[in-house]
Length: 119
Image 1: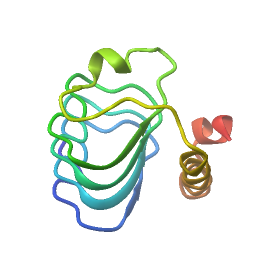
Image 2: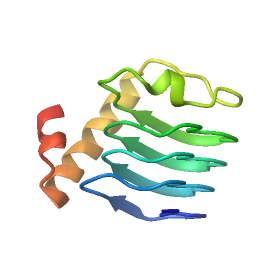
Image 3: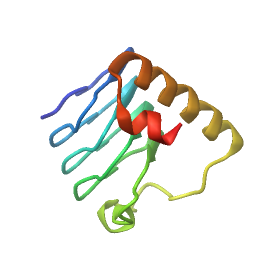
């Protein structure tokens, strides 16, 4: 729980799921994780987070900066995301390029089968 709390820089690649409050108050780190518990990216002000799986409830509550991309094959993300300060949007070409680079790095560093499948 609370991995990357208040992170200001660096990179984290997790083969597997994180617990609750992942990347809370993240202001500059980049992370790839294969699912998160409740309150992910809460109060995030910067950085990049790629979630390759489900999220718990209240994702992005109070999020005022940075980017979070969520691969949600189950289609539950709109229900789990707190819409008060964020907008759900489609991917831009720039997003797709960055996500592909993150997926490649995640696969190289962790051997993630999910990242390999998505590539």
